[in-house]
Image 1 (cartoon, rainbow, N blue to C red):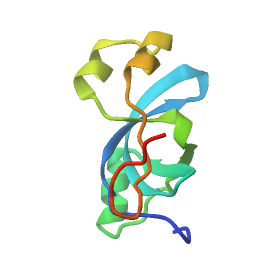
Image 2 (cartoon, rainbow, N blue to C red):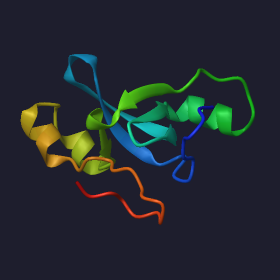
Image 3 (tube, one colour):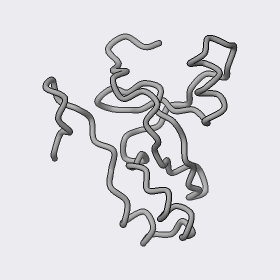
Length: 100
């Protein structure tokens, strides 16, 4: 899809911070050091199986977090909600998450 992107974690569940402080659980399609491209589970499955699907949506990394389904289901998005989530880090050349 995009030159210089990584697909090694394709399909990983993530939480993204959308417009209006809304939280969504989505599936990773591609990533690079600056952004990730995600899709709903339904669109991810369609694209993975070779069917026509909507294009993945790009998010800057500061709005992407590791998935925590129990936490996601139990809390409404607010400052404390976002502070409790772990940022989704890019991988270095060896496949290890980059620490800032």
